[in-house]
Every structure is written in C-alpha cells, then in structure tokens.
Length: 245
Ligand SMILES: Nc1nc2c(ncn2[C@@H]2O[C@H](COP(=O)(O)OP(=O)(O)O)[C@@H](O)[C@H]2O)c(=O)[nH]1
Ligand SMILES: [Mg+2]
Image 1: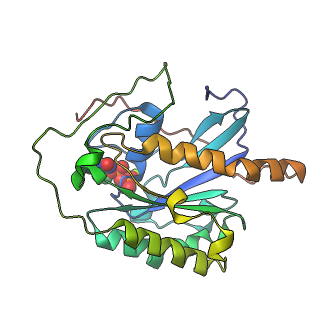
Image 2 (image 1 turned 90 degrees about the vertical axis):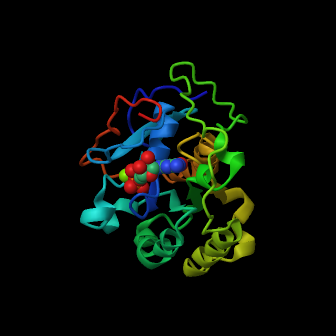
C-alpha cells in the first residue's frame, strides 16, 4: 500500500527516543531501506517521510543528539506517537527511558501513543534470528536484505524481560496521568524487535501508523495546520548499506 510521498507535507509526527546505541537509527534504516549495517551514521538524519494510504507520516530520528547535545523539547513537540526504545541486553537503557527521556515527551500531543520497544532481540532469542515472515508489506521497490543470525550463535543474557517493559508502560501512563483501562493495552504497544534480522520491525511501525490515523483525522477535522517543525527538513540519509558489512 505505501508509496513514495509526493506532497512531502507531514500529517503526523512519530518520534523514536532512547539511549545511544539501542538501535534507533538501525530500526528506521531497516524499515525504510530493508537493510542492516553494523556501523551506520546517525549524523545528518532528521526525519523520514512515509506515505501511509493517503497520509504522510514523518518518523523522527535523533540525529545523534542524544549522545552529545541532549534533545530539546522541540524534538517531541506535536508528536502523535513516541517509540521508547531500549536494548534487551542492557538494563540501563530501559532505566534511562524513565530517567532521561520520558520528560521530553511533555510536549507531545495529549493523545500521544506510546510504544515500548526492546531492540536487539536477535542477541537473546532464537525466535528473533530470522526476519519477520508475518510482514505483508510487499514493497517491490525495496526488497528485504536478510541478515539472519548464523545457526549456533550463542545467546546473550536478556537483561530486560517483556514484563519489565510492560511495567514501564504502566509507569509511563501513570506519568502522563492516564487511566490504564482507557489506553491501548500493553500487548498492542510493547514490542521486541531486531533491526539486524528484521524481526517485528514492520509490525512495529505499521501498527503505530494505523494507530495514529485517528489523530490525523482529528487534526484535520479541527482544521489545524501541521505542528511539525519543518525548519530543518532532511530525509534520513540514504546510505549504501550492505548486509552485515
Ligand atoms: N545485534 C544487533 N545489533 C544491533 C541491532 N540494532 C542495532 N544494532 C547495533 O547497535 C549499534 C548501535 O545502533 P544504532 O542504530 O546506531 O543506535 P542508535 O544510537 O540508537 O541510533 C550498532 O553497532 C548497530 O549495528 C539489532 O537489532 N541487533
Ligand atoms: Mg542513531
């Protein structure tokens, strides 16, 4: 269904947040380029525009600012969805979401959707060793470049369980002053992914795209102009990536 954007005017903003090295840029790269690269530069990336049905969705990467300069309140301003990303092999990366990143979402939309994403699942779980075969994306222009984990690769210790992520989701809702019962259930918005193998990556982005559609319709019916900052528009840098290069 999705095709290249023509109008380039974002209807809605989705941001990826999380500590350095959890794999934010790799997740976006896997989704948009269908590839994984071991070293990938975040510098230069700002947002990627994705056409979803008749709508344009901007997906924002941190451009490396989480490492050197911190992220300003502008980063999440007007966001309809925030992807809080951690590394399943690194407990601290989950803690940092609460300690450093959650407060940055104060400027997101009041009806913002939160997803909790544990990346690098290929390191801890054989299920995540291959690409997500459930995907119905069928993007002929960008064939998937698989990067499966070789059989027999030893698994690493999983420091963050799914239950830990679900518990964080509950705390995020509490921080936002939201009733758990009135919000999306954790099973819908907590994911374990692998940017390396592609496991769950399409499912993550495309579930969120569907979930933000009501937000687009609401914005349109209210006649709001776009709240996305277009001062520094730059699509995510297209890199010549090779599988496990
Ligand atoms: N094994 C594995 N490594 C990953 C995965 N995602 C990212 N990485 C690696 O983790 C490092 C940091 O990734 P990057 O996307 O730059 O993280 P960012 O700082 O959050 O944008 C890089 O060396 C990536 O190759 C993954 O799903 N599995
Ligand atoms: Mg990055």
